[in-house]
Length: 418
Image (cartoon, rainbow, N blue to C red; front, side, top):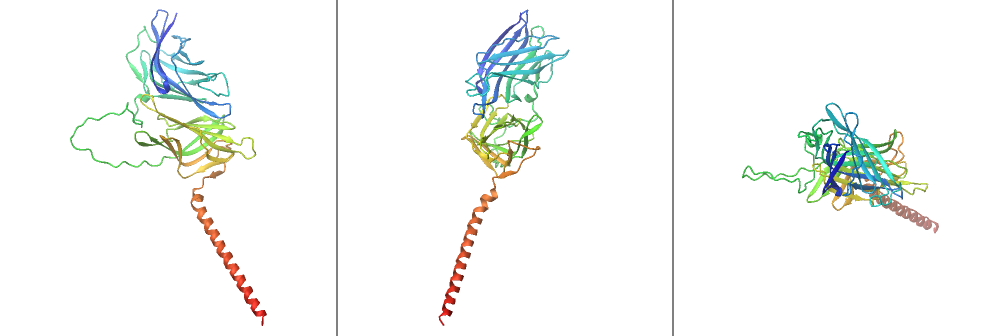
């Protein structure tokens, strides 16, 4: 008979609990061991047909029904249940020399009104995704401290501080580690300064450090993003993005389109573009259709959600949301374009600067942007003085014409007197 033990650690990312699971075989020897933290960011449709982001984390009441050791012919399974009807599991298979995770199954229950207070669809929703874990040598422990994420079907799963060994032999956890790629990066990622990752360099000379002028941050590169519904493109976006974070000191972060992936949802009245820059930064843009029942319908940007994680330990550096925008307004079936720099105020500590923007979240045809409605910086700058000048010019012409005709009439009247 298999047994399972677990303990809960300190609260971390999104108030998630660290969970330690120790699956034992019939002889009470460990056969599957895991310790990790995880959390979920879920986009769901509300009763008003809008979309919201919900955060779901492991709570203190975790159970562990269904976990099994596995063997040469049967997959091992690590399964946990938590909260109001939520569950998560991953299965492992092995060869003669390695083991690896195959599929992750995650079920979230929108009947949990504390997490999904106004969900349109009620009940359990299950997604299955392929795990990206590389094969690990048998008897090795797989370790990954950095944050990893998997995105699929409106759900982003976050994992960090992971220690795992499947198919443990003789009940003894291995001493040799196999590290994930993120724990041994070729170049250090850019992270925001926090108390946890600030270090003080030792002094090697008494000479003062030279004063340098900070190099201005250049405008970000423009990225091209798209979403598909089946084989059909349903959303197009071209934009350069720059985050302006005001914490201890202002910090500008350019989003690199070369490392940024796009995901999200398309709908008839709401659509969301979710960007993951590959450095633990996630940005969601939600668009809705207004005047949905009118003949002339328009779309606009309604909500922006930004999450910045510490790339080293997965903790939240910043999470901000503004769901009260009325930006980027254009007719449905058109695209919105603005070449000049624009600023989105998310909150007092975060702004997003956009450059070379063109967006079409609805009714994309033939994988191309439709006719654009431009924010027209040239019109903003020149149309007013041109209009004023034209009006003044017209007034001068009218005055001259009145004077000319009045003077001519007066002369003709004088001739008639002789």
